[in-house]
Length: 328
Ligand code: UDP
Image 1 (tube, protein in one colour):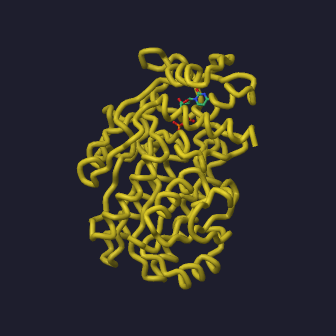
Image 2 (cartoon, protein in one colour):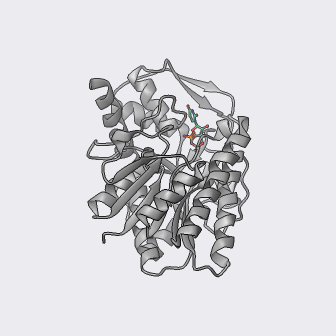
Image 3 (spheres, helix red, strand yellow):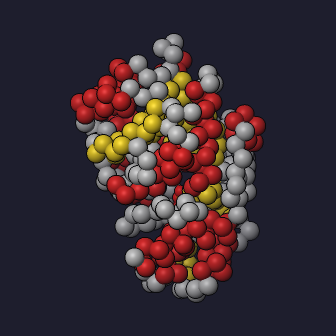
């Protein structure tokens, strides 16, 4: 392989797992990250430039010097309730900064782009599992920012400039590198699996379940949890696809089946062997009841083969990572 890949946000949770696989595959990597939530030590391969996507000068300089063949973009804010509270921050960080990145790409002549999109673009889907053909209908500002970028990408690709992209719509990403070298590393996590692991560790006093009156079998929301390394592998197959001339495409990244919040909590208790208090709390704004991917397209078109479709394994790798941090 040996492709030259610029990875924006490569020091973060998902980006760092992708950088690890790219490095193992022999790619030349430049990570561009402002380290706002990312960690230098999470970048296992390539060269790290500390820079912000708001800083167009540095960005253009990096493109001129590194001359990437493809760009992957993980640098974004991802917390739904925070986006409800601070929408403009989300539009700046996720939309304006992506626009800067795309303009830098255009100036440099780089034509290939991989975008981290989200199942949040679907809002409350009419059909479950949801296919890529479902309309973009987000119900929170976070999802709006991802849908807006997808429209920019579609229009740029249609403009005849030769630009091609793959947008990967992530479902609920969890777990950590099975080799234990990297994992989730963020001071105040909001995502369910991490919060449940923190509760199991005793780092937070209890776990709240946000909403027990949803139209689901046990009343709690259902999500499609995907292991971060399987998601990272999807980026490698998508990169190969673009490098070998593939047309612009959008793919769901999930396993195609979901678990309720209560099922996740039960699995975390079983895998960790720890009990912790769980309290029922009101619904959280912006949460759709059920999000499960129809993932046939990425399996069929890109040959993506997930290896870790097992909630207990996802939780186990997350737990190993969490407990390693406290041991050191
Ligand atoms: N959730 C919960 N308690 C928590 C964190 C999350 O009940 O401490 C619920 C949340 O309301 C949603 C599901 O777990 O129904 C997944 O939320 P998460 O924030 O992990 O991911 P999202 O689907 O919002 O991207």
